[in-house]
Structure formats: C-alpha cells, structure tokens
Image (cartoon, rainbow, N blue to C red):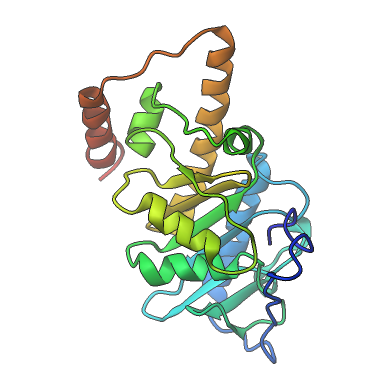
Length: 240
C-alpha cells in the first residue's frame, strides 16, 4: 500500500477487493516476500504501513504483493495477496496494495522483471520532490545503477499511470531505480530481493550525494569510467 496516497484521489482510486477465500496458494513465495518487507523496516525505508514489495510467481501469470494497510510488525504470509497480471486478487483475504495496478503494468510490459519495491524513503523522496535526477558522482552509483538515477513523470495513484511512467523511464536504462516526481522510489529487479537491494542502495546514494552538495559541487564520473565500473560490478564482483 502507498499510505500517503489512499483517500487523496477518490475519483481515480481503484478499490481492489480481496479474493473470495484464502486457499494458501504459493505460500512459500508469500512467506519470502513477507520477510523481505522486514528489510525495508531495518533499513529505515518505510514509515507506518507505506511501501510494498512484490514478486512474480515463477511459471505463472501471477505475482504476490503486500496487502493494503497491513502493518509491518504483524505481516505474515497471509498479509501477502496473490494477483493476476491484470491486478485482480486470485488468492488471499487481504485487499492488495493500492499500487497493484502499477506493479501489474510493469510485469506485463517488462518480462525480465521478477520483483518490485516501492518506498517513500526520506532522501530519495526529497530528490523526487525536486524532480531532479541523482547525478552519478559515486562509484557505488556506477556499480549498481550504471549512471544517474532518473526521474519519472508525475502520476496520480490508483490506476496503471505510475506503472506506465516506470516502464517509459526505465526502458533501455541501466538503472533499476526511478524516483517518480513528487512521490517516491520504485525499483525493479530479477528478483524481489534484488529490487529491495536497489531500494536500499538508492536511499544510501541519495543521502550521500545530498550531503556532498552541502559541501560543494560533486565531481561527476566520466562516462567511460562509469561503464567500466558497471561492467566489473555486474559481471565480476562477488561469488559466481
């Protein structure tokens, strides 16, 4: 759920219904995604019930997503709802997030994406409020994002407008993160955990670059070096 949005646009908001009953399908994946929400809390990326994680169900035209308004300290697999790629709940007794249409649009149009995260984390949202991309002035940015973190268009909540903005902005872009104007962070990944990592990294570099700008103008990294850093991190770094 995007708590800052619910109730603010009643003429547009799609009120998503829960499924008729709880069948307990895809329980292992739902448990996994419920646990990933804990990383949003421990990394101070969310406030109250805002934010969500979703993940595509392997081999099915389905995904799982946090229920709307479900509190993090009580979140279990039963707070995660199974939806089809049109955003309709097919299992679970919790109405899915008000961002469900946006997630569904991304899954329909970016088949390489298997996980998504949305937060309103403080420093990233501050850049979004300014509608200003975060410049690539840190090697960690070059590693994870392959360049600046882009700004997506302003979009109201409740239908697939945000999803459209995410796809339009990230199509052909190396960044797994976009800061939607006046809103917050949306990240994508090959898995939900990868999208969570991108959200953590996005807040970290947004904070560091903000602090750097208080001291003076950050020094940009040349494009050739960004490319080399990105290639190394994506293909050499870590255990293979």
